[in-house]
Length: 342
Image (cartoon, rainbow, N blue to C red):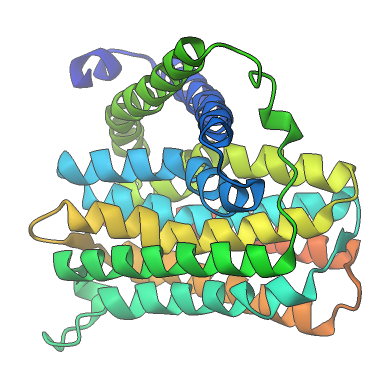
């Protein structure tokens, strides 16, 4: 695949990357849908499905891309995708949803899961910081150790357990109507579609990585920056579709809850899984500490401030602020790091 993409003109490479990302997003949608049907056939309550199957399914593209990138020796791409997805989810997607219609603010979620989201971002930076080496991560980078990846996965299990418990106490679940088209289909048909969806997620992720590396090389931009922009947007398509649909139907609380959950899973599930399968841990290049980590932490701070000063709804000016911040962060990434010396 590396030779194939190397022979492509730049415009064709861009088109091919976009096409792969579209396939990845559609495959993730299929995966979630068929997984929900199978879960319902097993007798699981919708409240459990919404808190586990749906949330894990929407982050499946990020997990597939990051794990494969780590296994193929591209840890900066793996971490860049996880961090970039948090920036994209909170800045771009939540901003767009808020501009469509002021979002209902689920106080219980933002004051409970919201602080977990905030803490998860800081935990990721702290885990990558070279505390023992005593070096400057802005010049030498850091590492997310393999053992910390396993710690993240243990925390993931705890978070999912809490999510199910909180959902049961709330007595409601995310609306799943959009996933029920195959509710009356035969079990072999549902299983077949699920296997095809999983194959497409893994296969498109496998093809995407060499294409992204080739594009990064041509643009003299670090893999982590490409991963945090192109790849993060593409792998966040399920969250984008969910948030926009929820906002249009005035279910903004679902959009906010989905973004908060996705951010937590990007740390515990995506970064955790990628680190756990890498014996030497995930190397965090200086570019992450110079631009991407600060951008991630800042957008989480802006979100917390927005929640604090909002009343019953997150208004359009706040959505515009999030969107402007996302655009500025991406422009800054390329302006500061998009040079040969980086």
